[in-house]
Image 1 (tube, rainbow, N blue to C red):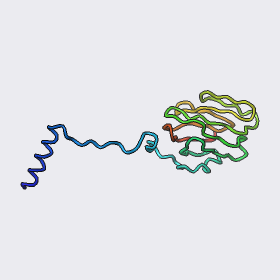
Image 2 (image 1 turned 45 degrees about the vertical axis):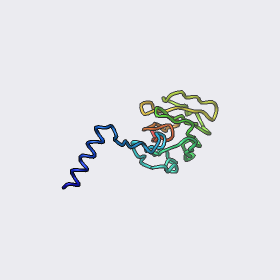
Image 3 (image 1 turned 90 degrees about the horizontal axis):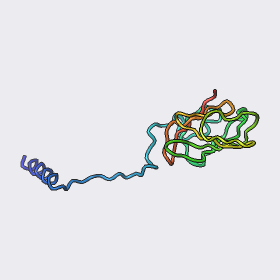
Image 4 (image 1 turned 180 degrees about the horizontal axis):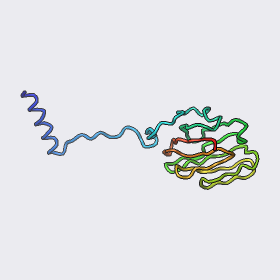
Amino acid sequence: MAGRVLIVMAVAAMSLSGCVAVAEPTQNASSSPLPLPAADSTNLAACRDAACEVEVQKEDEVHLDPGWRLSAIEVEYLSEEKITLWLKELEGPGGVVGGLDSDISGAEGHVSVTNGRPAQINGIELTMVTGTSARAILKMRPV
């Protein structure tokens, strides 16, 4: 019992004197986990059929089946607010509908997407679920 009293008195004395230990965070914001896990984790191959939800990083490249008339989508830029995607080897009159900052020139171009502003390209809807400056969750679905 005397030991418990001493511990309580020591904690009280430290609190009154301002000697309280504060744990510092051990991870920086860019390496902290995303608030939601992606349904397909980091498996970019799950997107070949344009139906996936994957965690991506800058320079990740998603390859699609030829029927989508779009060879690949590369992650060009990430932030908490948006993902900018580089669209490679576009075929046909797909065009980008929606999104932000879209620019298509010939068979390539880019488009930015957010949670509230998805984009459609060649029958694929692209949207950002959540993100940081290092990683984001990209959702793709046929429309």
